[in-house]
Amino acid sequence: MAVTPGRLEDPTKNSFFNTDEATPETPAGVRAGTLPSERRTEEDARRGWSRGLLGLWTVIMLSVLFEPAPNPHASLPLWAGVLGFFFYTGFFTTIWGLAGNHPWGLKASLVTAGLGLGMAAACAVTDHHPLFWWGYEMVAMGTLFGVSRLASSKTSS
Image 1 (cartoon, rainbow, N blue to C red):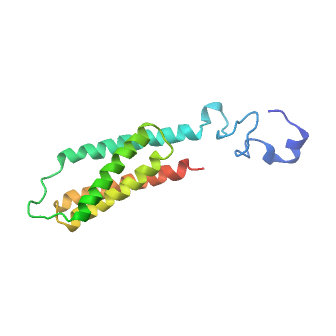
Image 2 (cartoon, helix red, strand yellow):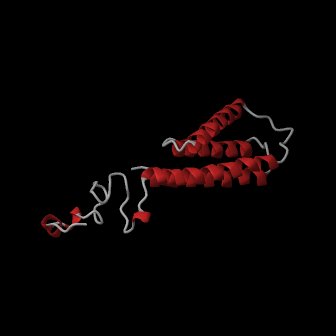
Image 3 (cartoon, one colour):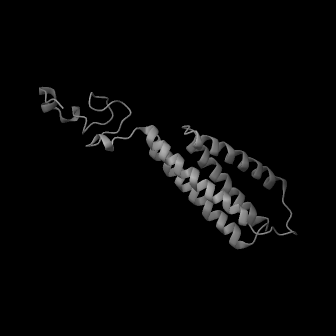
């Protein structure tokens, strides 16, 4: 980096202190670090979060294979069926968004995890499954919601 009189007078013109502006050393959209290997673009950060969430969604949804048999005497109200429809629609949208590294994929994950929390609550209210299962659903969807929220906040500009 060249030392110019302007940079000596105002240290914020140095890309190390000011990472928002593009400089010849640090192009726009790149976080400044001390080494080139430490610089990451927003797309790289989103890709990392998307891959992690995609793996987490996969593990949690595969756990549904071990779901206990539902209570045969429990009746499911219409609103629970509608909630389930929106959850699965959101799930496939989330997978599409995360797998394609679309900017909206992280937000779709957040919304779908919220719907999953609603489904776990519906499972508890309707006595559809035993306590341990809907408790697991609450923990799993709460984890997905928290990670999705963190990923959305870390990658938004």
